[in-house]
Length: 474
Ligand code: NAD
Image (cartoon, rainbow, N blue to C red; front, side, top):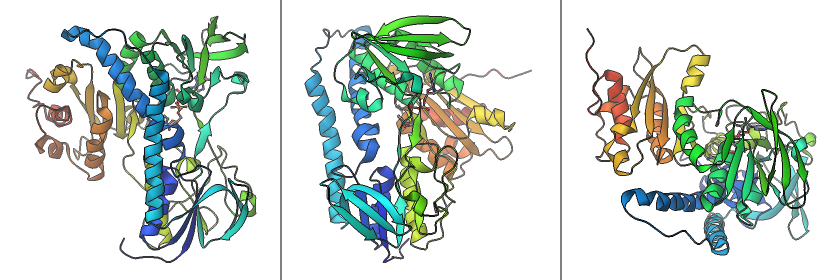
C-alpha cells in the first residue's frame, strides 16, 4: 500500500466508486482527472439517492416516533409540514457533503472536470464540458465509474410529472393524497415510507410473492407487518398492466397473478423496479471493452476490462448496485493499476434497507444456503428478549447467525430491527475475520444495547443464551 505510482489516470464518473478511486489514486501519487457532469463529486448516491433519501427517512422516523409516543404518555399535536423547509434541509445536506468532496478533491490536487466523457480510443477521452468547451485528454489508464439509472417499463411511460422515478420522488414537489409504488424493493419501500409518514396513502405493487426479494423471509416479515399498518395496501404477485393520464390523476390497472384486476386512480406513481447500468458510453466501441448481455461491463477480479488500459467499477459492472461495493472496487482497481497484488473478492457485502424497522444482511443468506443445499445452523435471537429493544418499545426485531456446523464459522448475519443498518458492520467484520460463533459469544458487548443480540444469537447456537430459556431434552 505504501508504494506510489506516477501514472496519469482518468476516472469517468464522480459517485462513491469514482471519487473513492480518484482520491486513493491521488494518495498513491498518480496524476488524477475526475470527470462528472455535476458541480462537485457525489454521483447519484449523494445527489439523488442514498443521502437525500436518508435525510427524508430521518424525518419520517421522527414523525412515526412522535405518533407512537402517545403509547408512552406523550401526545404531540398533528405535525405541520413545511415542505419548503424540509426540501431545503435535504438540499443543504446534499450541498454540504458534495461541497466537502469538492474541497477534498482540491486538497488532493485531483483535477475535477465538470462535463461528459466520450472515448476516442483506449487512452484518449473527448470531454464536453458543461460550459460547452471540448477537450481531448490522453491517459495511461482510465476507470469507468458511470453508475446506473432507474429501469424504465415501457407500459409505465407517461409524460407527466405525476409519474416519477426515484429522482422525481426525492424532489418532493408535494405530499400527494395517494401514491402508487411499483416495485417493493429498496427504493419503493424506503421512499414509500417517507411519503406515508408525511401523510400520503401509499399502495405498493410487487410482482413477486414477497417484498424485498433478495432478503430472507423471516427478516422481511416484521417489516411487512409494520408497513401493512403504515401503507394503505401491499399487493403481492401483482403488476401494473397499464397507466393512463386522466389529468387529475393516473388511472392504473393492477393485475394480480390469479387473473384478478382492479383499476384505481392515484395522484402520483413511483416506478422503482430496479436499475440499469450506464454502459452506453459514446465511443466505447473504439476500445476493447466488452459489455455483457445485461449491459454490465465485463471485468476481472482486478476490475480490469478486456482493454488493458481500462478498468470499470461500481453499478456499471454488476450487482449488488451498492455505493459501498463501488467504493471498495474503486480502491482495488486503483491498487491494481499501481501494481499492487490485489483482487476484489469479499466474503461479505452488507445490504441495508433503511426502512423502519431496518433490514440488513451480509454474507450467506438462508435462502441462498437452501438453494445451494448447503448445511448450515441458523441461530436466532428474538428482540423480545432484548432489554434495549424493550426500552425502545420495538421488540419486533430479530438477529440471526448462519453458522457452519463443522467449523462453527460465522457465514452469514441477518438483522431486522431499529438500527440494524449500523449493527450489520459487526457481522461483516466477523465474517471477514473468519470468526467462530464462540468468538462472537465471548466478545463482551455493551449493555444495554441492541448489539448484544448479535452476541446472544451466537450463545443461542450453543444453547446457552442468558435471556432465552431452552428446556433440556430427555
Ligand atoms: P430493487 O431491485 O431493490 O427492487 C425492485 C422490485 O421491483 C423487485 O422487488 C422486483 O420484483 C419488483 N418489480 C420489477 N418489475 C416489476 C413490475 N413490472 N411490477 C411490479 N414489481 C416489479 O430495485 P429498486 O428498489 O429500484 O432499487 C434499485 C437498486 O438501487 C437496488 O437494487 C439497490 O442496489 C439500490 N438501492 C440501494 C439502497 C440501499 O442500499 N439502502 C436504497 C435504494 C436503492
